[in-house]
Image (cartoon, rainbow, N blue to C red; front, top):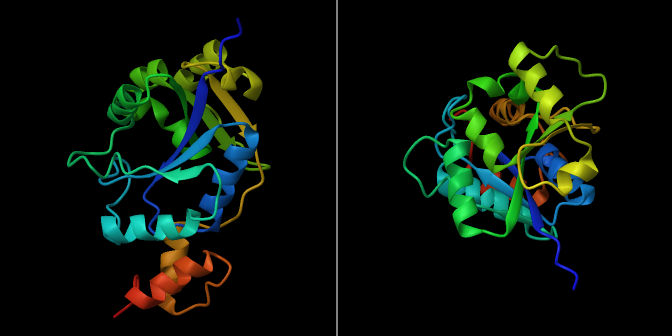
Length: 215
């Protein structure tokens, strides 16, 4: 008797302050890579960057507007429901309790991977999930000793990663868009036209709530 394949979800975390087309492109690429579901997960108190300017409710509203027509891409408020710092290891422990038959892969950019050894309980994260490191074309960063050792011991192809429950690391080079939330906030503050940098529904929300304006 054949056994059913374990569901495998990708996690795309961040402040999403605000969500933009670059975020959505990565989410769609993850979905197309073979993940059953992509969780876009806004954090409440990011450990490695300044606190968001928009409120929790506003960031959630914008994410819901941006993803409402995207199949298999969902919003998780699991980190927003906690009052403490948004540590990935703790988040994964809670997710594994809620979704006992699901494997998880945490997606991140090259900059996050280079500093991953300084993440809270980094070794525990690798016991709970896989990592997918997304490089942009032409992007080159030298891995530190810890990253080199992890890569040598845990490297996997995308196909291998999708059939692994935890502990594997895959690197993929995917074309990206040169858009950042920081740059987008600056453009809004300057009064620049940001059409096509974020979905029209989010743009309307930004205008309606006068977010990131230099009042």
